[in-house]
Length: 218
Image 1 (cartoon, one colour):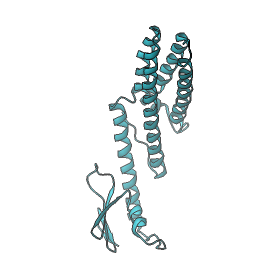
Image 2 (cartoon, rainbow, N blue to C red; image 1 turned 90 degrees about the horizontal axis):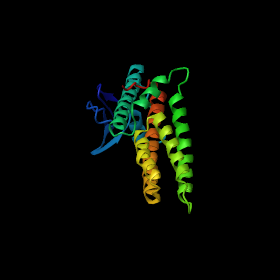
Image 3 (cartoon, rainbow, N blue to C red; image 1 turned 90 degrees about the vertical axis):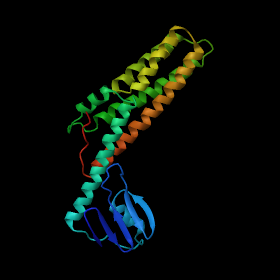
Image 4 (cartoon, rainbow, N blue to C red; image 1 turned 45 degrees about the vertical axis):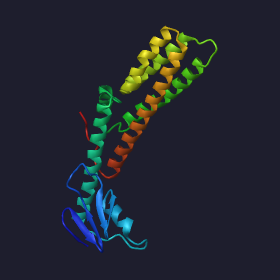
């Protein structure tokens, strides 16, 4: 195996670590074919025969690969967090939750958000049932929406919280059809932010597993 700080070659495979940080995957030239993977070790297992042992690398080289992996994950985390704020999925309340998390309670944010998921799904089911009645109790519907607004606000789920405002207005007007439209919209926004937060937490787990620290995003 031979190489430089940005690439190494094993057999017919040349593996390149792009200096452009916008390209998060490594480029692998296997013969004349171009492939991508996350780390040099992934590339090795992609092309090495099944019985081929992992090559013994100098400790400094191995450490450099680990630092590259952690750095890539941390940049992905920062960029992903920025997109959640930029697209309005989260607001400053979520940042405040992150600031309350420390070494004594490393799962604080995950636990709070998990409670939000449980409350939201219960309330959305209650709203679906309430609006399916022949005689809708709009006072009860409004109470459920008010709870959902408070729950989403507590974790900074801004788009879910914002959907609750017109929903409550429709309750005041006793407009069943408009309430049903609001319910569908709020369900969509809830599923979106749930998926986004789950992806964020998976990124955090990958950074910790690679030996890195979670970046603080202002």
